[in-house]
Length: 178
Image 1 (cartoon, one colour):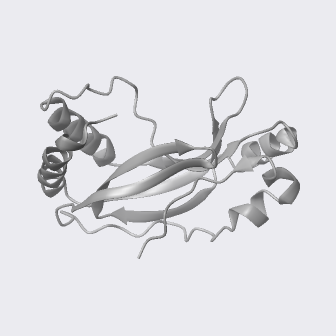
Image 2: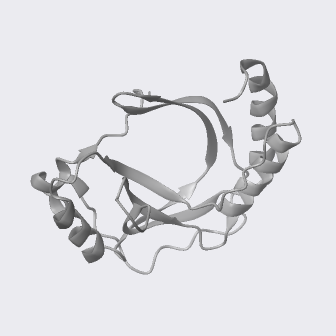
Image 3: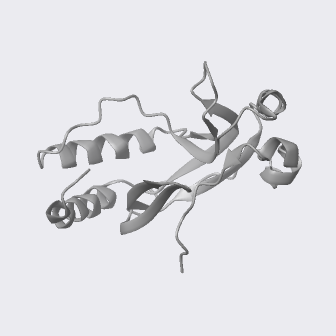
């Protein structure tokens, strides 16, 4: 939780940090779960940053906001894309087998060109993420090479995890964007 009066300083620091970090490629790989051991609560795809610029961006933002007196993030950064939350054990074994089957699948690569600060409010239907400020990253310093293999376009809800398996997932809700 951050006081509303800190938002202008946070967005100014986000803009400054983003302008100092060149745009960079990320890849989505595999299906996994959080936590890795014990009851599965969240289904994710791993986000890979081949040149570690995502980690650099995270450290720079943490340091910039820490300089405002906000607590520094002491957790290990685990870049991921949340696909859903597990809300029951129904079909869980089938889901876990599908996660193992697609553990190393490459789902695609993309260029990160901006950083967005979100507000996150947990509600009964899951978290609601609202964008508060977006800042452009610097232009890429090197051309982004094409990925060696063209990734298959996946429809995760139908091809990987059919209906009996998705019944126990809760959607992560985002407000409508332009």
